Length: 454
Ligand code: PLP
Image (tube, rainbow, N blue to C red; front, side, top):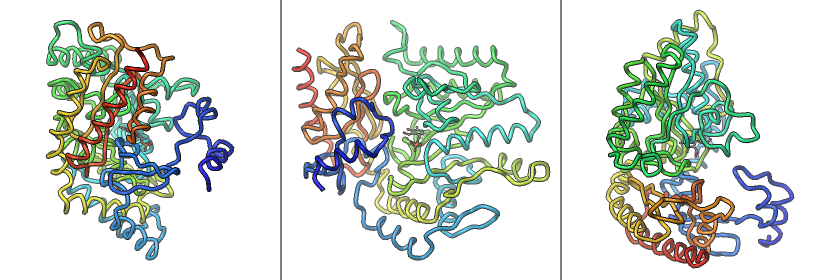
């Protein structure tokens, strides 16, 4: 089918997720046809470096034959079975064991879903259920950060701190409380050090807890590095200071590793890189390198024991999805993690991260770039109209969107986000030469953007 035909039929049939629908109707889609390694090809045969690993997920890259084979083999053997009512199957059992082995905290049990959003909904429901069972029915509010992204289902969207995910949807719901985004470049005060900024954020958190009453607050949720909110790496000492506050008030820390999990920051989990001590953890995306939709929630045995004992009072644990632990998804995720271990993909990511970060940070000298930031193989540049005052551009100008389009014209897929930030998150299997090529192409896009603005 021709690109023109597909484009018309797309607009006649699809409601696109997270898309400006008016612009889409006018411009049509970019149709991606196939992928191999770190590259994808569009329907016109143009090749791109997938500088975002899809939506931060294609960790092993595209077209890995072992993953295709794992899916085919499992479809042939048992295409579907479920975990309700004590039914089980080998792929889910082995994957749960693998996650317990890899987890950087004492994860006792694993609950499976199919998206990061439903994992975070499960987090909310599990913590409420748990607090009801231990006789703390008032301890229900959850603290989340401005600019956080935790998904778009009703529960998770409430935790998300981005206006675009609330406006027009009658969200957020009432159980969330919000604290400041740990974005030093934007929120730090003149003369303040990163450590002082972290102390201020921890003090603000404590003031909120005291105002609300610690007995009404169940948990604090955080991404180790914020992704969709603009790739915000927390300031020095942040989690250490925040956790001290949480521990003082008996508030759980939910670690949303949906982007950072499985090597993105140069360690297996972002919590290891950023010094977090999670109580529970959400995983998705790179869990299967995006080959199958699967997510996981990890909880400690101390929490599971309460749920199990609670069956005397509440009967069936009434939460779960038709596709919780789907055998094909689980088999592919297990193979993905085995390949990551065999090929030492996390070690590779850590080794090439220096190159990635040094090329990225060199953009800080560009007249359009206010800040270049990141850790491991994730990063962003924030575009400004005036470096000295850090003033951004009028949203209507669409500067980041223009830059993204120019990058595509140069054969590179990146992501424009709010606040005129451009994100980079390539497959973890990139080489140093790939990283150079990626940023060479981006440099051309940035110069085009500067010329357009001039
Ligand atoms: N949590 C984080 C940190 C994410 O980045 C995302 C998606 O980008 C989600 C949760 C939601 O995941 P999903 O889109 O699979 O529902």
